[in-house]
Amino acid sequence: MKLFTIFGNPINHSKSPRMYNKCFKYYGLNDYCYTRTLLENGEDIIKTFKKLKISGASVTVPHKEWAYKLADEVRGIAKEIKAVNCLVLEGDKVIGYNTDAPGFMESISEFDYQSVLIIGAGGTAKALSLMMDADILNRSENRLKDFKNHKTFTWDTFEIKQYDLIINTTSAGLNDDNLPARQEILEELFKNAKYVVDVIYHETPFQKLSKKYNLKIKDGSDMLVYQGVLQFEKFVDFEIDKKEVAKFMKSVL
Ligand SMILES: NC(=O)c1ccc[n+]([C@@H]2O[C@H](COP(=O)([O-])OP(=O)(O)OC[C@H]3O[C@@H](n4cnc5c(N)ncnc54)[C@H](OP(=O)(O)O)[C@@H]3O)[C@@H](O)[C@H]2O)c1
Image 1 (cartoon, rainbow, N blue to C red):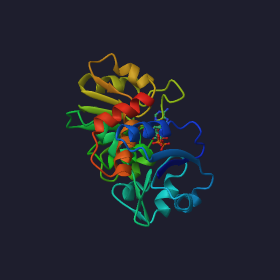
Image 2: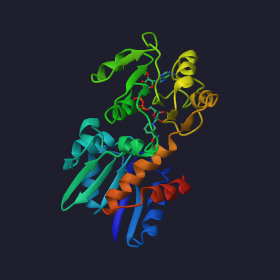
Image 3: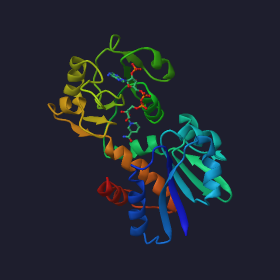
């Protein structure tokens, strides 16, 4: 039996066990089992992983930074993001990865774009900016100093130009009716764009506004699914049909 789990707090709501178990079954991995583990103290994450003899784990809020600090080894983009959302046992070592930003890239793999504008300058924007050459637009100045390799603007300094892909990474619209930038800025951008992506799962005022234009629109659910698809690939350690696994995971969400 190979045991997998998701560490988080709270964790009761997590649909990950259904998502991963369905995919294990599809691949005939009948001795693989994925559960939930409520972890109160992030400092215990690797100790608990080893004690429970787990083969692989997903890590969610609020433990991603602890997983990054305590994994025996961290690989790939996780080193730059400084957060780990996937732990895999290799020999006697627990290896940490981050599949959030690569999952986002996978979720837009069919898009054909040259120029990108990321709206927002928080943790999600930072992770995505490591994967793409994008300009950054944020409401306020302070967090923009973290984007040394990008052109950055506040709402007041922004000069409108054409971008193929516009990504909202702010929490505007998550629990309110706010837009992530002034409406007139967004409408000008939408006029000349091809794609709009929002990292929020439900329909936001940003997505609603973009519907007035002839754009391809994606919400955050594909990003969530594809970070899971990439974790699944690490857990099983063979090449998978990503689109097929994504379809299964989506059917659970
Ligand atoms: N789909 C997925 O799998 C996925 C994964 C991760 C996160 N998310 C979502 O991503 C969003 C951001 O998360 P995060 O961790 O990056 O947040 P964060 O680090 O707290 O950053 C929030 C950003 O949003 C901006 N902001 C907040 N309210 C705003 C408003 N009313 N108008 C304009 N800008 C506003 C902030 O601007 P200031 O700097 O001016 O404060 C900041 O740039 C959340 O909604 C989260 O649920 C989705």
